[in-house]
Image 1 (tube, helix red, strand yellow):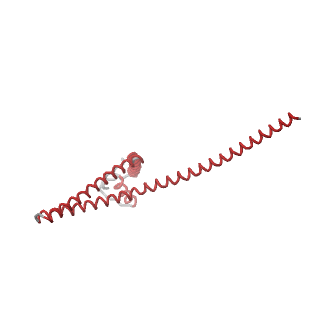
Image 2 (cartoon, rainbow, N blue to C red):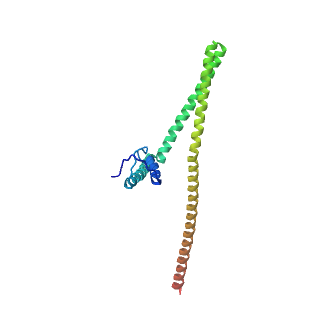
Image 3 (tube, rainbow, N blue to C red):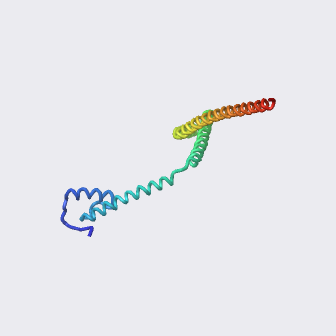
Length: 197
């Protein structure tokens, strides 16, 4: 029997160590705890195994949820185009309300002027918020531009190495061609010399 209900309370070092483990790892508040050593070992084992399985499950799910680089680029492009569209709309609203205030100042009641001024201030606030969001978005994507810059630099370095290897091979082929030509002309001269004698 792994659980033993008793009315008397024994509070020793082992009990004081097992209560936090039971409380944190299992479903309970420590009011019903195993009283035997076998029950305590099983409870701790189940808690540790549960924690391990939970962490593995979280790792697998988070790995599957992550987007690929292409998907991230598409999301960034879509978000950037949305922010640009909102920025243009907010700027247009600011201009519209400016024009309405200008028209109202020339001729119009003060109540409409106050309404347009409130709308104008709201439009400015929206414009600034979108501009701030665009700045934060561009700062977050600056890491991507740094990655692109690094990749371009690596590609340039690889191309330089490839071109130098190609030049070296071209020089070696020219040396081989000269050697073959010299060998051919020398053998032709020997044949002509031997033929005349």
